Image 1 (cartoon, helix red, strand yellow):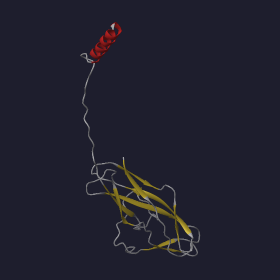
Image 2 (cartoon, helix red, strand yellow; image 1 turned 45 degrees about the vertical axis):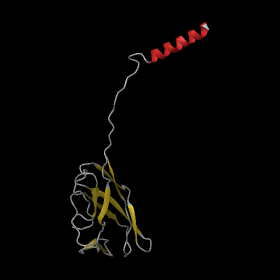
Image 3 (tube, helix red, strand yellow; image 1 turned 180 degrees about the vertical axis):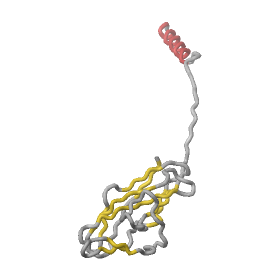
Image 4 (cartoon, one colour; image 1 turned 30 degrees about the vertical axis):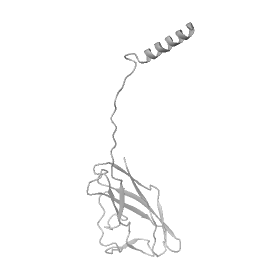
Length: 173
């Protein structure tokens, strides 16, 4: 009986120690979340080099200026976009509008390897892309990315319409 009394006394004492003052503490922490608009990218204008005429004997380029490529009037390239020929005023820039959370920063990724464009006979040319954006913070009315490029033509290119595609990716920083 004495053993039982001792066990009951130890058990009561142990329970008493667990409930003694200063053996329990409580704190609170705030919980929050910020929901932002998804980032978006909309193509407004294609990358278009226009109509080019290559002189048969010299290989020199002559530019046949046209008003548009079926996409309406085009805007000239902003500073920072490579032109195909130094003295030309080709309208060949692609234009993209970035939307999303106003004031948020974003990054741009465009291939830094040349892309291939081909004619229907699978003859090809290369285009080295570059891009320009005046600001990498999303303006509430939208932000613009301009993509231009330098056309690398082979010797004696064959006439025909050459085309291809490239990808632009934007993401929040």
